[in-house]
Image 1 (cartoon, helix red, strand yellow):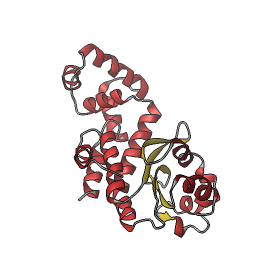
Image 2 (tube, helix red, strand yellow):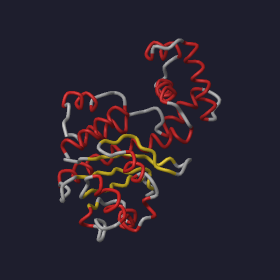
Image 3 (cartoon, one colour):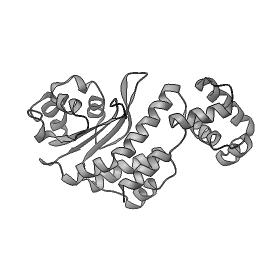
Image 4 (cartoon, helix red, strand yellow):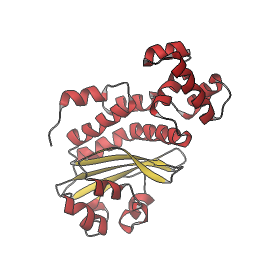
Length: 241
């Protein structure tokens, strides 16, 4: 594996949440010695996991890891104890299971972990997979994953909320500006859009949220964490200290 350290640093300090998550994935692969890493959130509307970003996996493996793995016996321990991170050696029979012997090992992976993300009520809202070519999963990888759990959890919560209302990336940007009390002309100047285009986006946002005005949209956005990167920014900075 080769890494562009300058690009990674730029991604980690970006004001754009998605870019920071990409930087976090690269950082975990670099510092945590993961040959493959995948982060996904659970879309509760579609009832499936949606990949946010991944490195080191082919499409076949990535699709399998975000599929119905909760129904497979080799993942029962992880889903039953989702506050803990287990590698293959801590899950009896995983290496010889279908996931280990038929999916991961043929693609060069000989150990790995699954970190499940959950909300305050204990509902699973996302997952992080990390896999290595070596026989032993590095302890630094587990430690970094645990430290970055709040950042991944915060981002997964935001993606779930956005998915529930089917807000586009541009609509989330504009909603964040609305939440901060900016006028349509100010939003247009910041995002390089015409006031008319901003007005159209705001109208769509109000319809999707089911609220009559931008004041209620701002309140709703604050309560649900929509359009704001504050949670994932703060937790990611704490994890990297």
